[in-house]
Length: 229
Image (cartoon, rainbow, N blue to C red; front, side, top):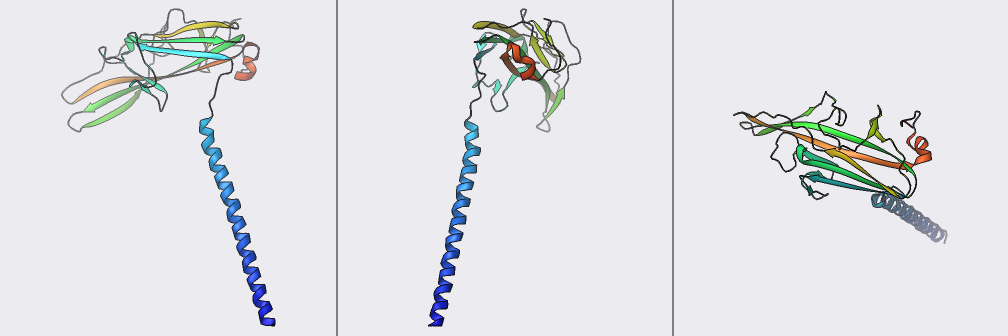
């Protein structure tokens, strides 16, 4: 009889252990599933700019392009511009970029214009392409800083050392601001001979920020006054 009691106690302990292990496994499964859901769902968040609308119109020689264009790298969000071949469809001399900004409240606007010049040299014999970053060392009036891209005639901004271009006006509520941010530019010379052929590609990306006019220093965390008035 005593042996039977011990067997029942042992069996009860085993059942209890199994129940505990099952609960632990269940809790772990719920936690992992929840963590995975949070990670996946973060990709579905659509960031907006509140009550402001920004439209970007990009074209080469009057032909509009979109995110499906071969001249737009959607994975890196950059525009691809040919700087060395005047006959290319995406030649810099044919480029136009216009921004249209409308806000429901009085706003301040700043733009971060970013460029990267890359020389590609293809060697025939080795069947190899070498890529080399380039730098523009001269800044010209009417162009973006240290750039070959010309600004539109009515694109008036103040450039600061923080890399942003500040539109020197308050965008009034329910009004539209048009900014001709790019209007062609200077082409570069690329060499070619019986050993290699060169091409120069410009990658352009930009960030446009619109904030409530009386809160721009707080939101942009500025310790100085970037505007003339």
